[in-house]
Image 1 (cartoon, rainbow, N blue to C red):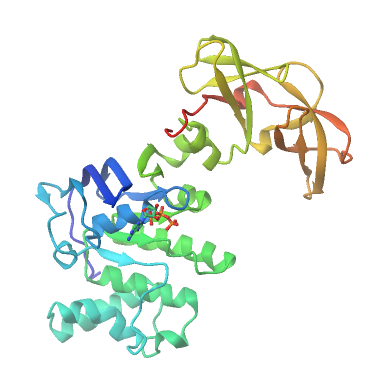
Image 2 (cartoon, helix red, strand yellow; image 1 turned 120 degrees about the horizontal axis):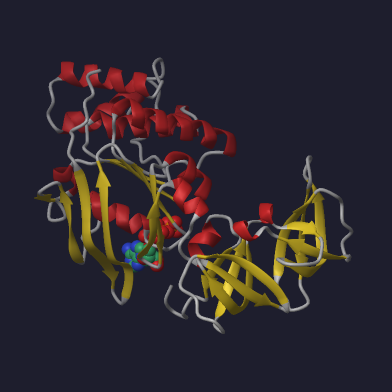
Length: 361
Ligand code: ATP
């Protein structure tokens, strides 16, 4: 292989902040990314994912803190001096240059000899599986092929770090799945270090070695996909990880890492994920998969069914409680809209979080 990415031990964001006037788009973000890691920056729209990526790339200056590549400070360097590979959502290809010229552009700008450019472009074409397409213009390619060109262009300069900003969001669902696998394959084959921005939790879970969840410019949790999926540390992270049922209640007891809530008169117990005090408001968070139609009793709450849909193996429904809580649940049996049911969750599958403080998370 002729493409050999520059190597380093770690990239470190050290108390990075970025303000736009009065808006703190990033607040005190500290993060260490190790060589060969695939890191996903995940969070809802406006949480600061692209701002983080653009600060690392050098497209946006930081307003506080520093970014380090091992012992070299890089946030003071221009983007081209950092030399990171960038892949954007809209591909950003040159429309008048063919595939080969697009991929070779960065090497040409760096004044590399033609033979070297040809060799590296061939290698990149083969890595992204675009041999035979090299003389086409971007307008003659599908969206997936254009994104492959963009990836080839980013890696051909042999960057220490590959930065991707929602690279798959312009593709249809089937192609998105295909390209997701391709991106991970390319990352592995090259031994690359990749930082990947997405708002799609499935994409982050399936691609990343570690996920960084951002909200309102603050890092909320960093962990492996399994850690985030199974043990989110805050209610908003749980929400993002698919805990769609959030039952607000009062803490009536805590013991050995467990908490019991009173939710509209029902006793719901689960795993306490935060420090909780008796009498305070808290939320029991439950995935739709774990909330089942069952018997009245412990960990069951009365609900009235709104909708029910057949999903092949089972039914998925929505319901509400007398106190106005909304539920998404599943059932082995069909249940009639308008009927009264009890929705149950195993206490091992319930996570209990403190009520978020207004204006802070
Ligand atoms: P999305 O998924 O919608 O792209 P994001 O998580 O990438 O969202 P950012 O683009 O990083 O979010 O934006 C973070 C915050 O900073 C938002 O409130 C956004 O409105 C604001 N912001 C971003 N760029 C600018 C700018 N050039 N000028 C002013 N405010 C900005």
